[in-house]
Image 1 (cartoon, rainbow, N blue to C red):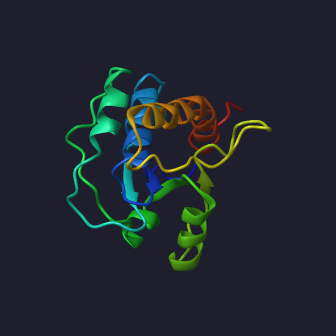
Image 2 (cartoon, helix red, strand yellow):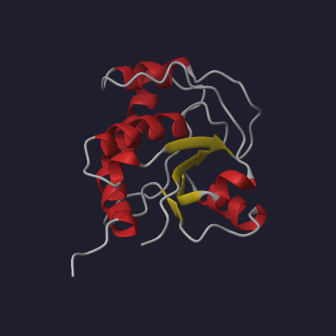
Image 3 (cartoon, rainbow, N blue to C red):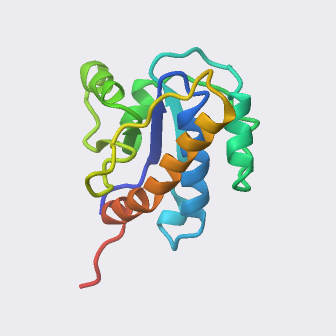
Length: 163
């Protein structure tokens, strides 16, 4: 069984999509049996600076699901985060391409957050930055839809079948 590192979720600025995905995935994993329950979930941005507050509409959209991400502050992705990740999930193909270009080494498990949904589901999650609350809520709903498929995939990485 591979060593279980953290789960890394990426977006551009780490103030909208990836903090929402981090909160949702952390919440979902908390309800799973071990070892999934103990997986740490973190998020970062591929083009951000450290310390920016999460967008107000992201906080509001997630608060409606009972999850509070108000304390989140942005951070740029580092090679150390990539190296320690059991799996890395981006929001768009451009996030994946950037990690493939800059990562040394490129993480073995690099995916899109919605990659495990069956067709014809859209795999990319657009950036709600600057949009009205309904755009953030639509983004949240796209993330929520994908969470069960992400959890199912993570089970294949950390749960050893019984012999």
